Image (cartoon, rainbow, N blue to C red; front, side):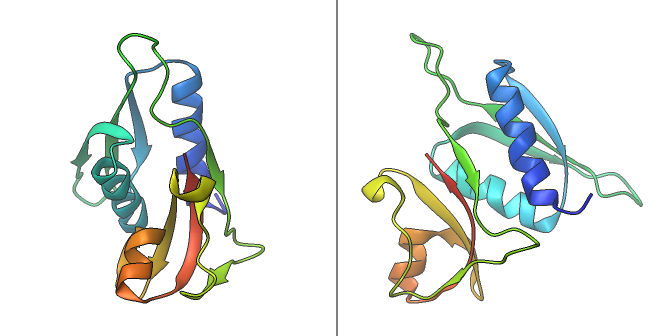
Length: 132
């Protein structure tokens, strides 16, 4: 697998299209941090890290749906920086997703965070994906 973050986003996207309640993805440090950001911003219901001895483990993610309309809290996920073309940005050129309605997940020297948190801490970094 050449791009584990794209695989992570694709697994979430496919689970949402199939209306699954829970999705399992292989674990890594960056995926754990992206999952934590999604939970903090209310895009997923809950998550659990399952560690296996001598293996990478898995992340179980409970997806969030509207109880009345049955639509997902995540409308679209788009990978921005990829192995073939990395996208870095400074604080001045930090992207705003749908005029602030969505989030851009950015990996910085101070950790993985949203675009708003990066602006507040005055740090730039690699733009991983847009979520709205």
